[in-house]
Image 1: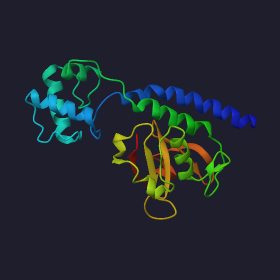
Image 2 (image 1 turned 180 degrees about the horizontal axis):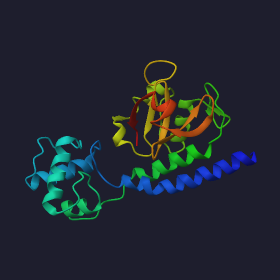
Image 3 (image 1 turned 120 degrees about the vertical axis):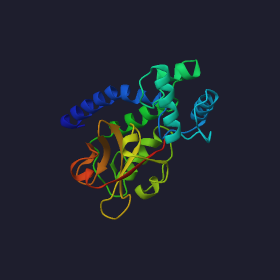
Image 4 (image 1 turned 90 degrees about the vertical axis):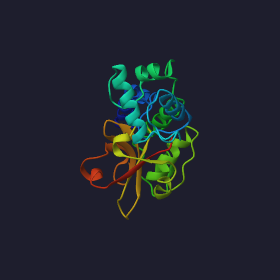
Length: 222
C-alpha cells in the first residue's frame, strides 16, 4: 500500500473511532424512529394521559408533542427526544442498548477500510467500486443486503429528512440523470463517504459545494 494512502487510511480510521461516540446517540428515540420500543413508549404516554391518537410504533409529530409535554411536566430538557433521563422518568427503567449500534459501527469500519480505492464503473470489490457497489460492499460486510444500484437502494430503507440523518444512513444525489443516481454513507458532521468518479472512495461534504447542490434525499436501512 502506498505510504500516502496508508497514512490517509490511518487518519480516517482515527476519525471513524472518534465518531463512535456519535453513533452511540442511536441509544435514544426521536421523531422518525419506529418499532416496538416506540410503541411501548407511546403506550406509556397514553397511560399517563398524554394524547396520542394511534399507538402504531411510529414516532411522528403527535408523539413528539406528547414527549415534550411530559418533559416539561417533569422539569426535563424539552427537546422531544427520548434520551436516558427522559426514558428513565417515563419507563421507570434504564434505556436499553440499541442493537443496531454494532451494525452501524461495522458498516463504517468496512467503508473506511477501503478509502482510496479507485472508481470503476460496475465495480463491487476493493479492486474498484462504483457508488452503489461501494455501499453494497460496506453493508454486506456488516451482514446487511442492499440492492445493486443507487436508484434501487433508495427504496431499501425508510425515507428520512436531512435533520434526522445519523451515521450509517444512506444519502442520495442526482448527478448524471434525474432521481437517485449517486449514493454514499452518511458519517456525521455533515460528511459522507462514497465512491466518486474522479476521487474513488473518499469523504466529502454532504450538503455544501458540488454535492450539496445535487442532494436528493436519504433513507435509513439500519
